[in-house]
Length: 389
Image (cartoon, rainbow, N blue to C red):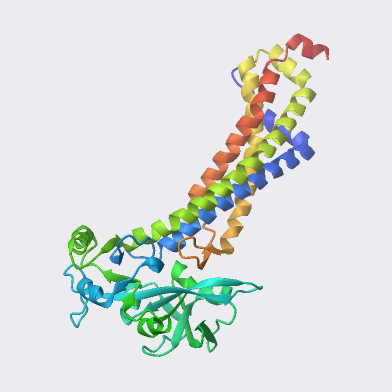
């Protein structure tokens, strides 16, 4: 006979429900952590990455990694806005906007304080970000101290409802007149207001943090970048907006994934030991059965594969429960500090097929590693000795 029927392994697991369930739940917990970390990392990349458009370009001062570090003067901005690679509006002006990015401190829900990103924008900024839409109240009036806030901001920070006044700097307050959404993008964790008003409030008159513009076509980046970076009047770096935001998410996503994987691997050692103990107990209690199988002509490698399969089935069952439970996290939100801006950003767990496949592969590996030593022991059982016990 070539193989032991799989039904034999399933019946063996069901006959010992207590240890089977306990071991499966342990594996399920590890897989839950593994899946959660993967989904959170993917959620960070999606939240920050979706803040940009592949048709847009962002210009920063040379050497700046983020908008918060950058400074572009009005004179430099005029040179950039005159470039032929930028799209034009109906009036012939560049479809681009100089923006200011700063941070302010506000109390968060539940106590404590955290940083909030403040972005000064122009009318063109809304055309450049087509996913942004007002869902409550109205857009701020240019030239006034009115501002709008992202949905995630209102859910995370205290005192950010429509009609509330918020102090951005000593003696300077703004009034919230609207709430916007952006399909879950990172800008939902920001406060937006008129760029000229905010530049005056933060003492940054005459300086922008960045210039964001729409290219004539998505393939114009290389030529646009070459012209601006070669212009002796400018010292700037040019990025495709999507790539810029993906780079911003990379460090934080990797940190969370590595930290989470370390925790998952640490816990997986315990889960594998649990599976190993369960399978060792199975071997000890079923020596007669193993002897009978050997007497019927099943080879040692077949016995090894049978017990290895049983361990894998045990871990896969637990992994399936953990992976299914982790999908419920798709309804949850997670808030953390963006290492690049030191401001708080709200993320969602992002369930995906790749995360589930990875979780099940991880569960299978736990079953393989945890089940190999007991399977080897089962394969070494002598038929004559087993039958006498």
